Length: 269
Ligand code: AMP
Ligand code: MG
Image (tube, rainbow, N blue to C red):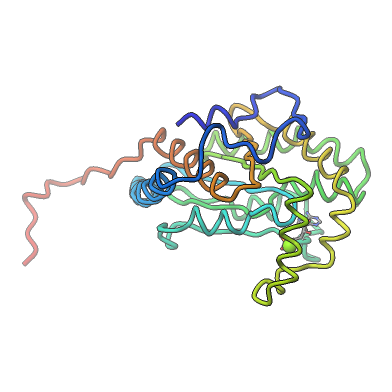
């Protein structure tokens, strides 16, 4: 499970996104072997999820961030394949509602952190509060500046209480985003995904990259690591995320609980 090491943002490292190639595949090539590995990961994830649920000790929180069209939805679809929706959820974070905005920014997040035994995927997250909020100056600098430490503390508290956290930044470049946004316009089955607001965000590409760099550099911690996933190639993105999720669940060694009674002494009439 080498990708977990290769894509990790070592805590304390300063990330410069321009130096990380969104096309890099770490020697992997699109092949039958990759397709097979993905299939095996999916099957194994299904089993690990069942054990996690039965054991009822750990929760897994997977955070997905990335520019528009970076593949967050596609990754959710992929990682979820085979998982039982009974103990797996997806939470998408949009512009805060009028109620959410009246609370602190972590309020709506904490509320939906997975319970023991559960897996939850966040499509966007509290990181939006140091990304879009910073770039669009939705709060004063003094306010968002403090949030990096607050987020680290919040995530540490969660991990100390049974939540394992994985954070993936899906790294695409501007040309790839252009092609994907054009595809949304060209394909009638994708028109609904095209959001004109994405063009304003695209114009501020560099400011978003700076904001991502600071979040990745300051908030990759021992307890809640960031991974930068080269995501121009969808097959590699899927391979990387499923490998890392699988390796992390394997490390938790979830076990089926042993019955508290002697099963040989119970008869079902
Ligand atoms: P999508 O993920 O394409 O459905 O878009 C969701 C939109 O909600 C994106 O433009 C995000 O930047 C925006 N959004 C998410 N969280 C926040 C937040 N805390 N403050 C402002 N905008 C947000
Ligand atoms: Mg969108």
